Every structure is written in C-alpha cells, then in structure tokens.
Image (cartoon, rainbow, N blue to C red; front, top):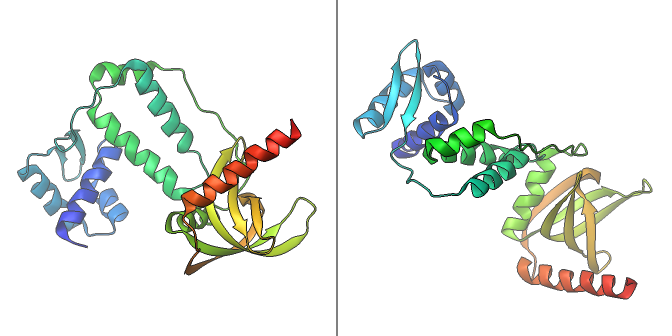
Length: 231
C-alpha cells in the first residue's frame, strides 16, 4: 500500500470516530504498526489537518480541510441521514461500511445548525430483514456491477432445490427481503430470485452477451405487460 493511500485511509478512519481513538486501535483497524500511525498523524498535521490528541490519550479529527462545505436544507439533511441510517442495517457488509463512511464525511462538513437538527431528530429507520448470507448479497451485487454470469443453487418456496445459470442485472430491496432480477438460461426467460433462498453461488469471469441496462429495460417492459394483462 502506498503512503498516500495509507494517509487517506487514516484520515477517513478518523472521520468515523467522534471520540479520541488510540494509536493502537487505529493501527489494528488499518493493519499497520503503531509507530506508522504516529508518523502518519504527524504527516497529516504537517499538511494542515487539525488532529488533536497525543500518545496515550488518543487522537480525534477536529476539522476536515479536504471536504468542501455543502448546502442542504433541513428536509434534505433529514432525508439523506434517514436513508443512510436505513442502509446501515442492510444485509450487505460493504454497503453498510459505505453508509458509515458517507455519514462520517457528511458529519464532518455540515454546518453546526444542521448537526443540531440531526441530534434532535426523532426520525428513525426501523427495518427487519429476513436472515440472508451477506457474502451472497455482496457476490450478487458485484456480479451485476461487472455484468458476469453466476450459477446458483436455489431453494424455491416448495423446498425444491435447482441449479440455475443466470445473467444478473438488478437488485430490489423489498420490505424484508432482497430480490434478484436475472435472465435464466434454464428457463430462457426472466426470473426473480430471493437472495435468502440462494444456498450456494458461483461467479464466472464470462460476461453475459447484453448490457445490464438493456436487460433491465426488457424485464421492466415485461413486468408492465404482466400487470396490464392482470388488470
């Protein structure tokens, strides 16, 4: 890892702590030595980063000079933080970590009046997800991002296990479950799959032959037509 990347990682980690963090704690999180933490903090201070604290007491970021001020009205602030707090509870490790990171960045730059608004808010996201393997969720999300085929062992609502080769192109977060929209090679048609019912998943390097946005458009038109036929 380059020194510049290490400094950025340390700066981001300090953003996420609202109270002083010891060098030992920072070192364990970043998987580097305590001595490196001390050197990197002094380097950040030399570049103008306002880090308070000392060895034995811990360090805290008092002002973040890298992030520009942003202008949000009260409702926008509530909307952003409510959405991010919802995301912090989703069964996807990387998205949860991303939500914590974005919240820390926003907390570093919003005006004091907006921070007081958030401290006093009684808006909360309360959600209960069906138990889902977070590694599976991450793998599905990455397969969509890279537009590659996957193979899953899937347990349907009747308890029947099948193996499907899929072209995954969209995820939907519905109430208590996550649904995958994909082209199924077995059925030669679009199918939806609940991620909590996936027993095993394998990612391939092979890209599927269409762009995910085109698959999504075709699937969406098919869904609209189904609703029209049932109305």
